[in-house]
Amino acid sequence: MKAIKIVEPLRAKVVVEGSLAEVEVTGGYCGDLLSDCIAHATEGSVWITIQSHPNTIAVAVLVGMACIVVTNDQDISKQTIERALKENITLLSTPLTSYQAVSALSKLGVPGTRKHG
Image 1 (cartoon, rainbow, N blue to C red):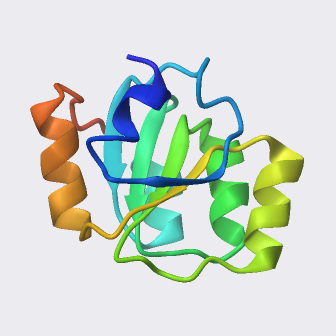
Image 2: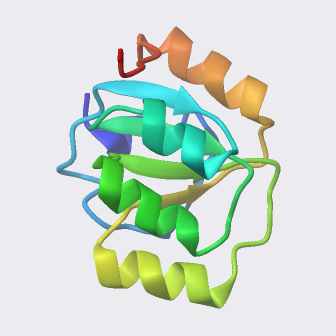
């Protein structure tokens, strides 16, 4: 499914559009530890996290994430937004908790994904 289809069910605000209308979501990953995300998330995943640090953008680029969803209405710094714009990474914000966001994605049929090593 296209990433744009997750905006409404997540009650998300589009912070940086990136490739929202074109990018294909192939799964989901939830985690707040950047190194764990690098080790286990898969390309095309929606990343559910409370992290809003600029390094999340670098991780999303490295892994090939479809988009980042920052939960709990966490503040997203100007630096993070600028980096997302530069890297063309879709960045969404939601008032939902990470648990609620994962639940909403699951109801849409988005599977949890994980690299197998």
